[in-house]
Image 1 (spheres, helix red, strand yellow):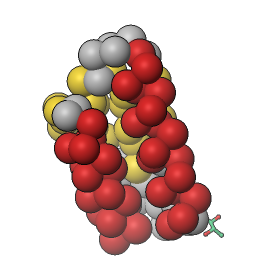
Image 2 (cartoon, protein in one colour; image 1 turned 180 degrees about the vertical axis):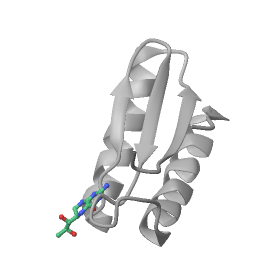
Image 3 (cartoon, helix red, strand yellow; image 1 turned 135 degrees about the vertical axis):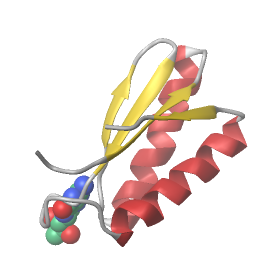
Length: 83
Ligand SMILES: C[C@H](O)[C@H](O)[C@H]1CNC2=NC(N)=NC(=O)C2=N1
């Protein structure tokens, strides 16, 4: 099983989640590194992994930091998961 970084973000409103997902999408394209995203009411789940190595790399850590910055700007709080 591939190792992943996962987190859930309490977006509370669906439209905030959609905005959050769009911001993550733009950053993912910039970084050429793409998380798995699940948009639901009332949260967004993010899973990061480097498929080429089958685990977590600095590309995942770097994108996780950027995602945390987007969350902070939107006033969204994270609940880290442990797989
Ligand atoms: C060539 C390009 O860098 C690769 O295909 C990228 C694209 N986005 C990616 N995203 C993720 N999450 N893992 C990868 O290994 C990956 N590879």
